[in-house]
Length: 248
Image (cartoon, rainbow, N blue to C red; front, side):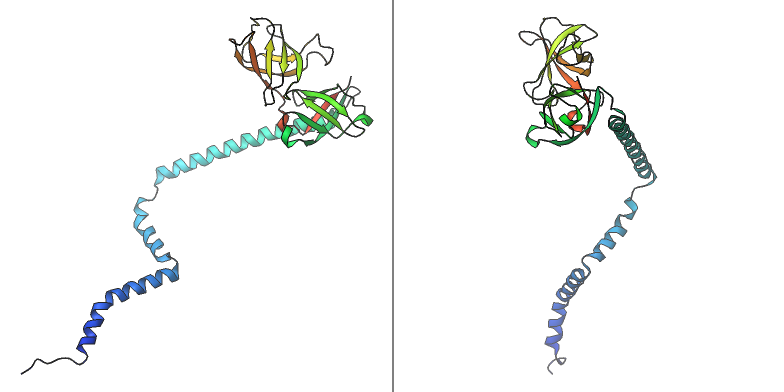
């Protein structure tokens, strides 16, 4: 007798062969429909035992405290800067001193000049000294009735006679077109060191004497024919919003 065959047996065997691929296709469609949310949940459950413990939480808390302290220090520094600017704006006017706002800077001459919102009608004239918060930044180069153009100490070719009170040395401050001008000495042994204060020369006839300018940042003692130094200005030109013009 021939073996009995189930009706549609071949179709059933075909389905058994294809069902793993059918399940894989269904799973793929479910992942596409849920945008991988199921896998993400499964992954989160699997790695839960490895999540940060109390030690990591303490480290994160310490980092947050450090960030808060740093933010507070930055806010305090900015507050002091704004108070200084407010003092220049509100309390700087006198018969010799006139406060003025910086109204523009040249993008191509950031270290060369500033434009002020006051001019000849306010009594400003070419040659007047211009002070930022803490120190000299430049000298009025030209004026219009309502504006003034300031040539900065950092502008290329600017030369100002200066004085170092500690060593009682004279020098020439020369703008280099960067944020830090160069201090050149005449004598070969000027007895200068980093941290020395630099001010306008008492013998100057172009600027008021003893105006603070900056501090010596570094010294090149091997320079020829005489040593020179790099000076960090006390009043940074790039951060100035208000200035004080010292009229002659």
